[in-house]
Length: 263
Image (cartoon, rainbow, N blue to C red):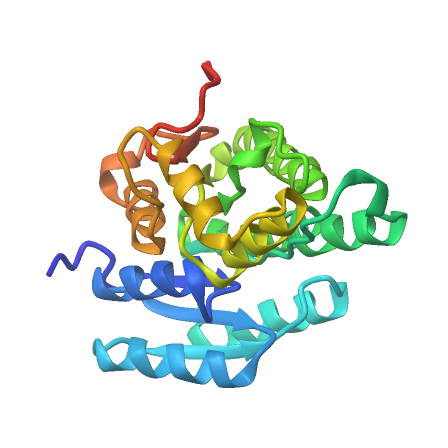
């Protein structure tokens, strides 16, 4: 086990299950104490127990990141409980799989609040804590819809493109404080949320979920769906000494399925 993050404190939003859980556990395995936030207390408690089983400190905070009051309260409690925040992984997400005609203004606003605005607000609040600690790492998780067209996920595409743009701009702002800011674009990752996407796609196509999974898997050159641990590996790189001079970058963990050339 590597202990390169010994003495560090990480805050992972949406950290109780799926990709966030895998990231939280990976950071703990590398030596970090971890604060996780989410909306479901039972999931938070279970993941916090798993972190403690690795011998690391875990703080579980219930928060709805679509609400600025919850964000401010969550960051304040995290800082009070740990005394510092060295790593922020913005991972909280919502997803509505629906054709464009079903997407209301309220749905767009909610997606923007849960993801893009929450990422901005939390980064803004955490930056002074990182500056006081002499530096830090911020990693934003924003799906591949930032780069591709996905007809049933227009709201995701809008916010993920915003996350990528915010990553670049905030990296430029935070660099003078020795804080790096990067982004990971997950491809189709085996989570409850992606299962829901596949179910809606199957409904639209008049087929079954297994057929959708088979078709999506065939689109991935490396031959399998992404696992949450694959995303965690990319986050660990951005948080490690190996990435000390990497900032403002967006990397896709998609098994090669993305066809765009990103410069």
